[in-house]
Length: 306
Ligand code: FDA
Image 1 (cartoon, rainbow, N blue to C red):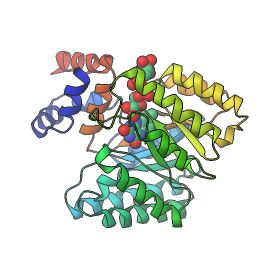
Image 2: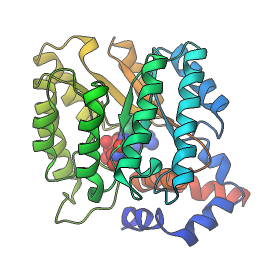
Image 3: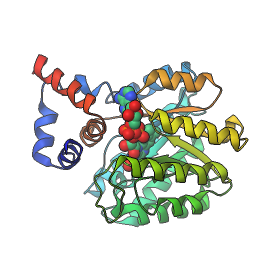
């Protein structure tokens, strides 16, 4: 119930205005978001890199409805990638891009061209790009853009959401040599016609997808904070005889940092997804929806400071 309400709120303009202007919001947001500027993003990246972690940076923003906004987001990514290279962080830090932030809802070819501009900047900097996955109405379009981009930039990463019924088939198609695939549970409110609704069913689907990716020829990126799924992934990786440089774990900034350190200390690659920028509302609401304790944290902060 709470999860559904928060995910609905994540797309509600009135709730958005209230939360964005609440006096404490920015403090609370800092737990999950690196800051608003490129300098903030670079500083957090340098700290995480110093701790032996890898990073994927997300310039916050989604559901862009104006071409000018899509252009501005594209330019922000290019600037970020130049800054990562200038600070010698591009070997450990890549970027994650939402196609909706670079114009997917306006014109798919515009979004593809903007994503290609970001990929060219990543190639110049010496790093990679992963295309985030959004709600199920965009899955086919995002996967076809991925295939178009991979013709020129074969290292572009895909994201598969285990909660979708289709995902195990998508994993089979994507588990090919050199193919970087992030597997997550899925963060949007989806109907039962396309997505598993219970935690148990989502977790079972996650394990089926994990098996396909880890036993396949690609580069699996295991994105979860779930201790059981991490343990299963570690076991499957050992059974498949995978070397540490042939897969990675991924978690979100601010969530289970000790576990991030533990995984890195095993010699495995551990990448932290670090969002930054002004448009944190949708991202924050999805994080709150994932965990009641996060909502309690937010409410406590509102009660004490608001
Ligand atoms: P879940 O939320 O079920 O949590 C499982 C367990 O993890 C909890 O029971 C608890 O034990 C532990 N845990 C979780 N949060 C904790 C906390 N704050 N403190 C302590 N323990 C905690 N989604 C999407 O739709 N498209 C995308 O492109 C991406 N991209 C993405 C990248 C990366 C790197 C990650 C990690 C995640 C995404 N996601 C995503 C989000 C993803 O789909 C999902 O919503 C969240 O990762 C939460 O799911 P978990 O797998 O962590 O399990």
